[in-house]
Structure formats: structure tokens, C-alpha cells
Length: 117
Image 1 (cartoon, rainbow, N blue to C red):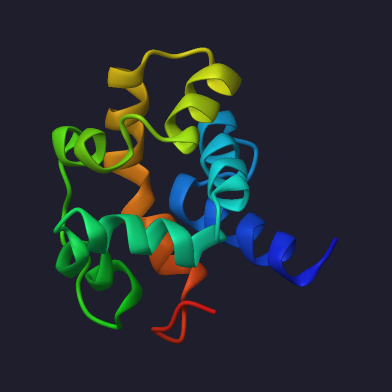
Image 2 (cartoon, helix red, strand yellow):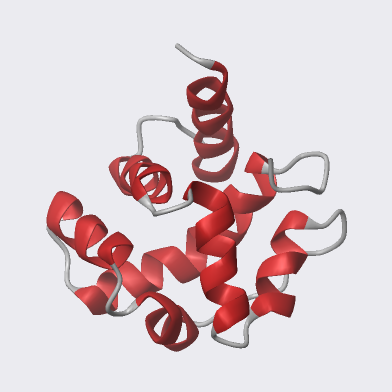
């Protein structure tokens, strides 16, 4: 297991209580498949005007919440959303809800030093 895989597993485990949660695993896969990885994902949020929210997940302070609708506005037509829906067998609405719930904490755990690597 590589360093990034180990970090991802720890992030999922700390967010979800278990690294075996399929939705969390699918979210991590989708982040890794995203063009530019985590950096590319963060850029999407900045490009869509939600950079301050996404930056809070990376920073050392409190994570700002995001709604399923905001997730949909950033990732609705993205390959990440399509991949998550296909792998998890869920609708885009369900995927947006899961992403809104888990993405802030997952990104927070993937950036323990307050920086996107």
C-alpha cells in the first residue's frame, strides 16, 4: 500500500468509522480519478465560486458545511459525479447528498498540514 493509499484509508476510517464503507471508498476513488486529483477538485470549487467553503476543509480551522445543491452545482456534470453514481449504484441526488456529508471531512483528513499536496 502506497503512502497516498494509506492516507486515504486513514481518512476514510476516521470520517466514516470504518475504512470498509463503500460510499467513502467510492468517493476516494472518484477524487483520485479526478483530473488533477485533489488539487483539480479544489480548483473546481474555486472556479464555481465556492472556493472559500472548499478552502475551509483544507485549512486548520472549522470545516464549513456545503449543501447537496452546491455540490451539484460544482460537480453535477463532472466525471467524478458520474463515476460515483455508477460505482455506488446511486442517483446524482443521492451522490450529491453523500458528497455534501462526507467530502468536507475526507478532504480535511487528506490535508492534515492545512495544504493540498
